[in-house]
Structures are given as structure tokens and as C-alpha cells.
Image (cartoon, rainbow over all chains, first blue to last red; front, side, top):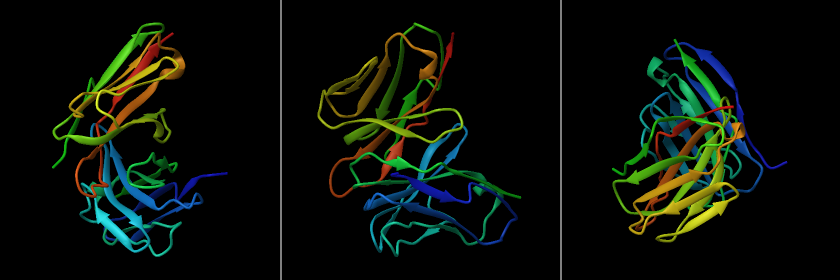
Length: 112
Length: 113
């Protein structure tokens, strides 16, 4: 089954404790992206990647890192999480930058 | 930077009524996509519009892309309870290799049976 998977689905952590949210897709998509969704603010793009080793900033990259060492994986790294990073995070993938995106199920992160 | 405004933020209708959500971009778009997110779910792709003035239909849903490629709309005819959810437009800037996708804030549609 074609899908985008994210882990963990739910995470409660404390300020400053480094964490990684994994994202994996099995559709051989070149394009992958991370979004955060907050009430009243909609979906905002954090980072995106056009291919292996090619990443670029979205609209809200501060406080986040990404890497794309393999085509199927695009982890999101929070080196020192803060409470304002409490949000619902979605990973998405697509055939290219101008094609439809397939979203993962989401990761709900709470930073206390 | 590119901004995509979407109105209304909320819309409550009686089942059978029509519904429209509008999207306006501060810059010309190369294409616009529409997504639907059910409560508690993830966004699901509905359609992409690329050409100026393009109109596409999916059963009761009609999507339009403006002549200037700066605005778009989604119209649902005779809403059903299964239409409940948040509808997002997402625009991609024109020119160069702009792969950044900017989403509108979405319109939450609720339908009273």
C-alpha cells in the first residue's frame, strides 16, 4: 500500500530535549516536505526537499533541521525544542515540486 | 513573501445548500492545489489547476482558477454531511524553480443534516 508514515504519532517532551520525528514514504517520490499546523494559522511549510541531499527552507524553518540522506526518508529534527513548537506536524511527499502531495497521518507534539 | 488568503474561515450550511470558498494570492501563481482535511485526519489532495481561467469539476465540486492566476475558488453544490471538513488551497509561486508551497488558512465547513 502506497503511504507516508510518521513516527511517533504522539510525543510529549520537555524544553531543550532533542527529538527526531521520522518520515518515510514507499512511493519513490523525489519531493518531500514538512508542515506544521496550528489553530487559526493553517498549514505552514517548514522545510522541503527536492531530492537526496537537496533541501530548502519553507516559511517557518527556525528551530528545525532536516536531512535527506535516502530518497524514502526525511526526518525532522528539533535540536532544542521550545513550547512554541507545540503543534501538529505533517510530512508529505510527491513526484515533484508541482505535483500533488501525499500527507502522512501527523505527529502531535507537545513541549512543556 | 508570497501570501495566500482564504475566506471565509468558517461556513455552516444546511444539508443541500451550496458552499463556496475563495482563495487570493498576493503574487501570480504557477498552479494552485486544493486539499480536504476531515476532522482528526490529514490533508487529502483534491485537484490541481494550472491554466489561466481553468475550470474543473469533480461530481458536485467545481474548481476555478482566475484569469490572472492569482485567485481560485471551490464551489460545492448541494452539500452533504460527508462534505464536512476543512478545505485548503495551496499555491506555488511562478518563475524560476519555486517549489515552496503556501497554504491558505483553510475554510472549515460544517453541515447540518
